[in-house]
Length: 329
Image (cartoon, rainbow, N blue to C red; front, side, top):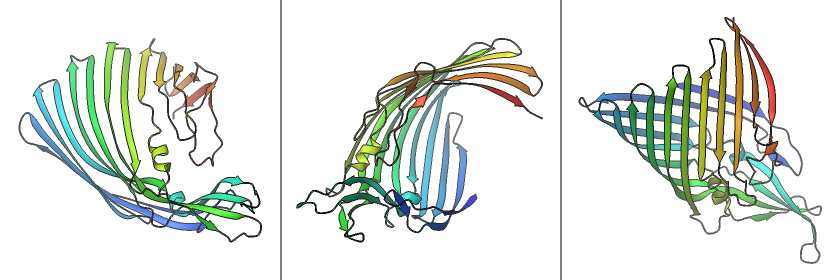
């Protein structure tokens, strides 16, 4: 059980963004229940539910069920069905963000036009129903393997509705407003593979691979393709290989190699990339440690994200090298 209360006040930047209202108090409370049921020596059932209330979309009920079968002592086959919600945020219900400006072109366009995205008070939660199954196998005490398949059904995804003109700033300029809605829908399916191997008591290696395919569409033909642009912007393939090695009682070396596939977007495609993080640590004394850390070592910089509304300037993640000292007392 939990409760969170938020009070914020956000300033105004004319022609860029403003919130309506600029000051808002809102709360969130939730309750989570779960029960593990042993059916017999080989079958077990896990039932759970999360009940949540927020001031934007009201009550959200998110149940889940997981059935597990143990055909042998080191093997598990499981099936799961769950429902989840992504509740609206402050921007989706009250933001007015300037996206672009179209210069005047008389006589067809007599005034400059500010294109603006507007949060809607009727914006509802995005909903997901997930179907999953997986298999886990342990090969002794040093190696385990996990395989999972999933299918996700999405509804009420964020979209932009048909626009309208606003003349509140005439004769300086016109405003063309489009409103957030829930016209997006679709599905996603994929597979995941993970392995955990301990070659020696001091060395652990973890491998993970995932494959994802999404198909999104719009239930309202008058809506814009913002839902398909944002929801579909996910890499099809991702790889991860981590190595954690205690070189001695006082020294450790961690390496993390990863691959992220190409991310398609409505305007800009983020290219695929490989990257490597490394950490060399020393335990100088009980509670005292020193670490040399390098991140994104394979490239000087690379992009990872673009904003569909173009309200955030696109930046790249740079290569970094830093020294960290820690003292626990």
